[in-house]
Length: 474
Ligand code: BES
Ligand code: MN
Ligand code: ZN
Image 1 (cartoon, helix red, strand yellow):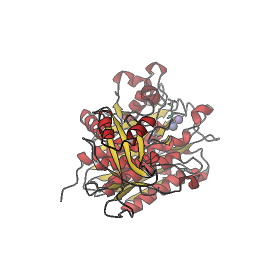
Image 2: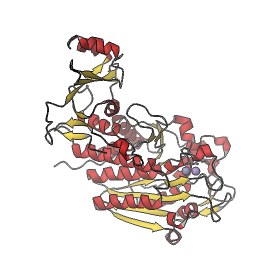
Image 3: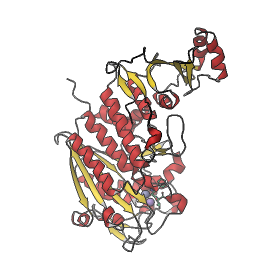
Image 4: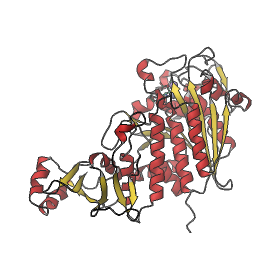
């Protein structure tokens, strides 16, 4: 991706000022048009531009060059930064600046939205991605380093999710984690294959052992920051492909399962944001990476697994593999005594039945943390919805022969809730814990949101972490 945001001082455009973008509420359109040359009124009507939210109109000069751009904000009171994601795809190549900044927004949020909207996945068709860039000029009020770091991390997560399993296997995820670690001076511990048994990650091993040796299961542990700072653990489900295992998925359900490492991609991306910002935390990013494959030594329905925490788990369904590997990762986090643990996982289809692809359910027993998460999500326009760790469903994950089972009883129905209740048995009890049942995917393109891999909840979580762990001001 070429740089979509540039500083005002870094490069002055050769021919005149950057093209201005005017942001208009529906009610402001008529007055704006009246003040323009007379042909503008007809042009706006011809193009049916009503300043609806996210509507974009490129206004020409009488000679047919680009004069200015109009961006609709819809009805007053609803302008939100992510509207600006719609811009890059609608603009001719060139440099742009904002003529006006809507009340309640700042240029930094807008620049981030612009950068997110410029994302495209062109790994397998690089020629279609070529061409001149659309760039937004930021001024000195914008923390360009931060905007770029957040945009870069989101693009990384989307690239990882979009890249198919044949090119995004366990080794590739390990390599990405190593590159991030090296860049920020973090250390990376990797435990691969049968070493997982020696190092007491039995559930990660059981889920991943059926993969071919080159795609052996592994546990990644990235450690960064001053150990004297409060420890924050970020965990991500890294299932590079989920066939369902012996409880094989039907073809429709398997089609998108390259994205089942979305939690890992999100955890690494969020960790990267935290390190880039230099937040005063001791960071641990814990990523169990497996392929849920089918082979002679695949785990079977009915097998009882050991876990790192010492609890036994009956595998009622080999397709409920995410909670098994997360159990070991949460147990590892608990040993580090974090003040805060966040896990991110494409864990259940039921989360989508409840809230669809755009709103992400989260679970935490900590009411204060829930409010902070909601606040961060609102400010970043990164939607979440709190769901209950409902006590009445706890017995649905009790097994007849083991401590727990991974396939909840059908009577409880709420599959995302019962998955969260399963995880809670392994979550650290020092400090707070929150679980996000993410989707990591846009099933349908909409303005500024390409179809395919999407970064969800991590911009909001980054904002939450910044307020919880503020940098000492100089
Ligand atoms: N990776 C899937 C969940 C999933 C499915 C996420 C579709 C996004 C879209 C997970 O491993 C899974 O298969 N979960 C099962 C659990 C069930 C067997 C208890 C599910 O949700 O059906
Ligand atoms: Mn599964
Ligand atoms: Zn899965």
